[in-house]
Image (cartoon, rainbow, N blue to C red):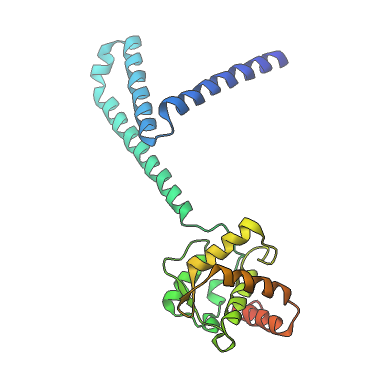
Length: 224
């Protein structure tokens, strides 16, 4: 039994390898080619059926075969459309995991978000990119640095694992997300400013001002 399983496994592996090579070389991952291949296989199956049971059986039941062919074609096209939509959905999502949070308990007035900005912020919470940038104005009286720091605290509380330990490409992705999602007092965020502010913010976590900022954000998110 063991030898049979081993030989069968090797045979199946060769068969699967051949099928994979065929799809890679001939079909080339093209959705249209896959649909045409499956429809051709269906036609070949019907033709083989006629050779076994006679052409008369095909003639008598051609309406049923035609209906099956149309249904199969519609299903395949729909699956192709669904697959393509999945790819577009993936491009609409950022790669940061947001902690579970009740959006109805968030006090948006704390960070001065209007209705449109609120909708865009909720997109971020759902793991999606914004459609228009959010103008972040909190901390104007303390200057731009305070704005950046409060924004950092906000995402440190929102993202699973926080942002303090982000390094390299992951940190770059975070900065890019901020630059593509926010304006700072109607001005674009600058990468160099983000880098400088982020480093300073990380080193000041134990200072009273940083603690007050975190308390402010936690109250805004209704965490305390």
